[in-house]
Image (tube, rainbow, N blue to C red; front, side, top):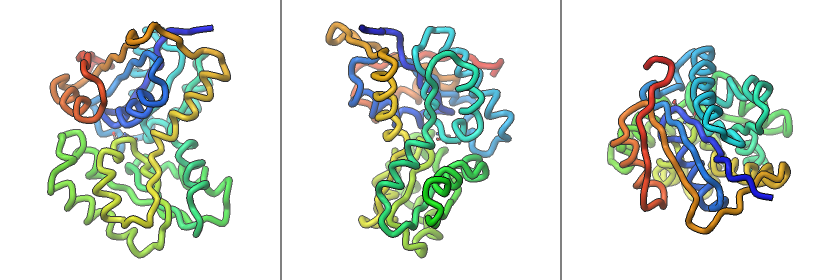
Length: 270
Ligand code: DGL
């Protein structure tokens, strides 16, 4: 059995590309459609109701194109909209928070786990409650990092400014004796080398988005909806509500794709 309908990925901007990167590696046979709502990024400081509305707009855009599965490749959107969207759609819908949580539980030895995320995700308490539900003895230290997303979206994530912002922001975590730190925002893996450098080699970084792809793979098997294409015939198509040029620059730096199709779209009248 083969199902060549695409898998849909959504994020507030380029962050979900960190999930797509892993999908291209683990699921090279799958067709991919991606929406980044760059024009309205960041979602982190926005009220939950607005994030839910924007997430629905991205979702409906991809559902109209016939996706077979939806990956909410954004922690902020997952934390407030996953349950509602999952309940409403007839296709499997996956968020990035639970896979990250499971990986952290597996990695930690000293039970001191950190979570860095957007303000919205930290406020929702989604990681903390998911971690504590499985392991009440954990100590969880959550820290919002409101400046990280704009550093990534402006393609500054290799710069010395990025190094300075990461070092200053993460300073409060250095006294916490963490052995595991969840990158609870899909934009953050683009800053991973800098984050690792600041936290030190003994802290295991968990890329929640990349962990999610293992679950996507499992669900494709479970529902028997994997694709078996003619080699070289898979497509990846990217839509952004912002500038296709900037989106493409970052996507080209990040993804192992020779040709990238990026198209501008309008959502919700932006
Ligand atoms: N990439 C997103 C996340 O995982 C959202 C970043 C933002 O728009 O604030 O939370």
